[in-house]
Image (cartoon, rainbow, N blue to C red; front, top):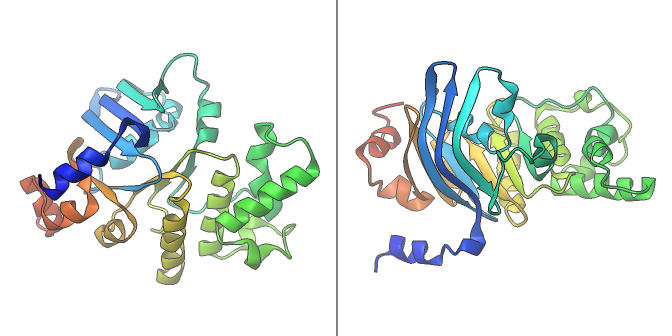
Length: 265
């Protein structure tokens, strides 16, 4: 039995967090994703890589139903979170997004205080019964985002006054404040300098102890550094999915190899 078979043998149903089967996305008449089938593991960082426009962000947005906000979008197939179909009519997308947090490419703190940025989600979802409970969640979330020590004395200052890297960590604190189970990140470092990028990457590694983290990145070096699993998308197809180390050293599909060696991209 080779290493990849060993790894597959270790994947039990218990460790699968998200299951996608036959997922297709259309924007009007244009098909953006074809037949995506994948199992995403819990407490693991999964990286989606591929050229621009290949479908990786489209698929990421399917996982918390962000595509619902686009009137021309139509999604077919099934996505299960802990075995529950997230596109079932009984599922409230707002509640789903509390369980599946999202961090975007450009830091987008609310024009509110640092405290209120983090407190917003727990307040609207009714997760706390008192001010002291809310204070605790804000502190804990900022600690998880490795930001507490930098902002604890200025929680009432505006979140928009922070540096770019701090703003992105504030957005991560905001996302984890609702106690999600999955954290989606759409190119979270693309607007950041190298030092802030290194801080976010270190943070991603810590967050996977508690969450299933899915990151879209245009940087193959970043995917190799932060993820345990990698999915390569090309022209709307999920071409290959497996252990990050194997995808980068021994890809099974010639298209993956061409992308990794820089021949397509």
